[in-house]
Image (cartoon, rainbow, N blue to C red; front, side, top):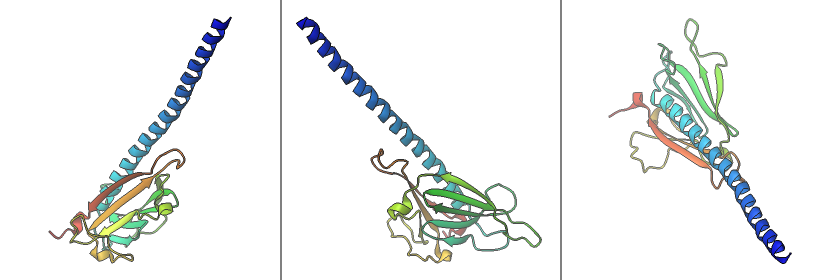
Length: 192
């Protein structure tokens, strides 16, 4: 009888240990997969944003390539759909949601009017909550070590835009927010 109790005790310890390992393994596995998804989404958003900024050029009605340059809001004219017109593209943070709005020029004479098409391109952005600028701007002397231009920025001096997006789905589970960052030189404003 004593041997049976000892065997049951050992078996119970093994079962509890295995159950604990399985529960935490599945939990951490979910966290890792969520972080990988966030990483993939961040890279996709960064690639799309950099592409829009690099292709910024004079609007179809003659406006300067950069219409607005704020810490959490950027508006440029860029040909995003490969037709003969440049669309007005606004990228901004609305709380924790990174959005893009595209307005096609229309009418005679051409004008950028109407609401355009707005899409949410990323969720769970924590830039505003952390006070971290989404967009930073640099002039033609940018070498990679300079401080960004001070807000409000003179849009005619911007040559390089740094995009820094911080994503965090659940602050209670992830150790730190995922930061994706890139710089893009506005090709049509390049002087050298």
